[in-house]
Image (cartoon, rainbow, N blue to C red; front, side):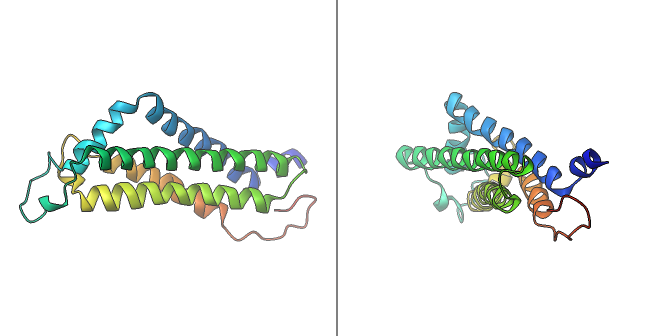
Length: 175
């Protein structure tokens, strides 16, 4: 019964979500580092707005300066890498907490920070800036809105689960 209590607890669910998302963000960052040019081209085309409807009222927004575009892409990769490292630190904190050598509060806060960084990147960067400012939604070829939305859903779900109010239980282990 004690194993069921631990494995079925909210903190175990949040720990597992942290492991999964740490792996995913690590793979996202690693993919952009090891296959730099593929997503660099994505950023180049989104910033250039070269596959949008090319409304003369919006094309002033396009950015074609290679230095600016590359700088933005490097910042994206750096943000992804830092978010991955925060989530990896959260995994370590969860392992310590579940093993009785740390607090769930620290682990939960690190997970929350990692998922907040994830939301800033995908909701702020890809949906707001890429999708609306650079009109990425108009492109049939360089449109990352669907995958950005998938990432927003994952991070939002994890944030909600991690920050649910935790009732004190009348058992051996509590959150």
